[in-house]
Image (cartoon, rainbow, N blue to C red; front, side, top):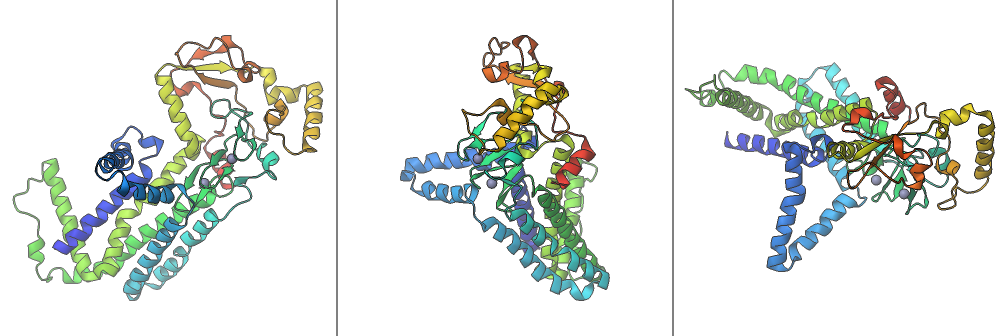
Length: 440
Ligand SMILES: [Zn+2]
Ligand SMILES: [Zn+2]
């Protein structure tokens, strides 16, 4: 019982710590105990340890640790990919031979189909993609995917490393050392940035991994339960595992205690019957399948909301600043919008000619850029009518930066208190958002 209990507690702890470490940084958990635990583990405890180490050894211990941590978190390396693939491979190698003779042919076939999928989708997410990375060769095309909403993205913003203007929804990744199109986030599990071109493979990776793990947990239960049911009545010492007497199951704690006790009993019997190879892997699968599927659910929410992980953090910043009363919403002058420009034949001709002249030369870098180069027409069906700015003193803006002055007037700005007042032009509606994500 003691060994089984140790395995169970260890597995649960690893699952919880993994959850807090990888999901605690999401903006959705910012003001929750999960976000607090994430900051405690990754910021407060290391900084307290660093102070202690500085006082005791002049920082000798933490310098080495910081270099290792920096390498693991901020450098491009395949260690986490190797760990992930190693874990899947090791679990499959231990588990399948143990239960193979206990499962029916259609389950064997299903296992054969499901097992390779995480490997394939991880490969597709990790390999460089001509759409994901922005280069001087595809930059002009990348500028035409999304309009600048003047809320999260402004035209004319250069990337100092890549030496070109950042397309809307892009972000420079310091690990991949390139600007990434429709940047979602840099994922250490696939050792690559996820954006336009490979985000759909990442979703497929989460789905296939979640299904594989959940199916593994089911197979462990399905294949071992006949053994357990055949043996548990005469199982030596079963009586020792029976629930504690005198537990008040009406109280919340008593109920929880009894359920936990039953869970421990069953897990212990399964571990005894199936061993670590069968039940140990099954238990790990039972406790970890919600991780990829939970992350997938979060990304489905992001798709529903028409935003990326990167943008969800930006929206969360705006929401906090709005609550502080320092954010002002302005209305864009209609003649500065693509929709109205393209409706005016004379202006359209002007823009067309300036566009053709720009395409004959390499894409210019600031400050020589013309407004047309900074904001070329896009194929996106929506265009922002809003401009959002924050002021330091919380007062309405008196003078606007020239970049904003050219598209809006001071008097059009009014204070906004919540995000409901702002339109998200990258949100086309749930189904169109899904189509957009899956087709790019
Ligand atoms: Zn860049
Ligand atoms: Zn990256």
